[in-house]
Amino acid sequence: MNTNSTNGNLRPIFLFSLPRSGSTLCQRIIGSHPDVATVNEPHFLIPMIYSMNDMEVRSTYNHYYSAQAIQDFCNYLPNGEKDYLSELHEFALNLYSKAADHKVKYFLDKTPKYHLIADDIIRLFPEAKIIYLWRNPLSIISSMIETWGGGNWNVFHFKIDLYQGLENLIKSYKKYEGQVYSFQYEDVLLDPVDTWRKLFGYLELAFDPSVLTRFSKVQFTGRVKDPNSSMPEFQSVNPTPLYKWKAVLNTPLRVAWSRKYLRWIGEERLSIMGYDMRTLLADLNSLPVSLHHFPQDLYRMPMGEAYHVMELQLIKQKYLSWRSGQRIYMHN
Image 1 (cartoon, one colour):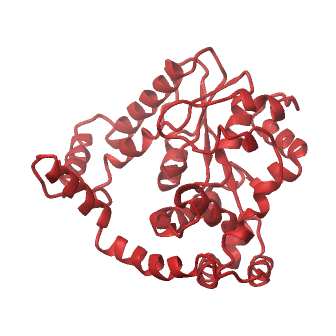
Image 2 (tube, one colour; image 1 turned 120 degrees about the vertical axis):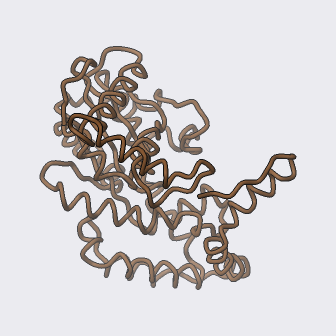
Image 3 (cartoon, helix red, strand yellow; image 1 turned 180 degrees about the horizontal axis):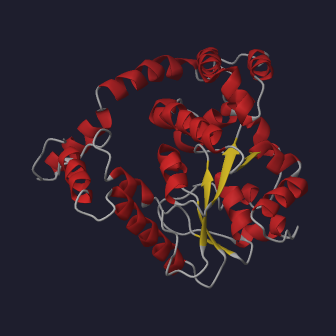
């Protein structure tokens, strides 16, 4: 990969995690350093990298043929696909440079859905600093339910994150272990000074403890962002979020689902993330059982499976288009 850029010495930082892992807090702390620029969630690398993926995208323009055409086009380039990716590398750095409001050493791109393309990003940006952020899976599930479900079971919306996303992160981390940095959200809240001193050391930036309070001034605009980031309780580093999952997952069906999910992850992958399966299962099994959400869970859990099999969101979007007088097209 050609890394000779027209963007001076700007280097990207990529923060990889599952959604609801505390990545926005970490982004704001890193972004409070004067040598780092960042914006909420750029996302643009996903369609750019998926432009050559002929299997996993559905669209009205027939993405399958588009991807094959781009692959064929690369055959006309002097260095084939390498030239295409080199231009994509420069394109991204140019955008990062323009998004930074002043000259900085780094641009931090925190887009949770980058778990889908983590390996591609690391290969595309060999000069980048790569950070993996892990969080207790039970806390992640709980936060998804609370943040986007209002307490109601909605985990079926995030199967791509919890399954394929986690698999991709573990696989890419194992592949590049030794070249990347890894830490846990729990350490961010329980031992912030030592945790951030080590992380800023990896970034080759001076650590100033004031970033642990100054980050509250880093706010994001735009429609795609963490809906909780501006709330008062997220303006300081405190351990309260670590234990919220116990009041959310304490119904019989949620305990059973969470137990099954932990076993799917398995001891080895949990260990890579820094967690112990026996401890997590013991914590889960010790919860006092509540029936508060049981009727809704009994309905919403099987509904979630139907939601994925029948692509109900796609049907809903087509219905709304039809209601507004638009033509309906097949997605290829």
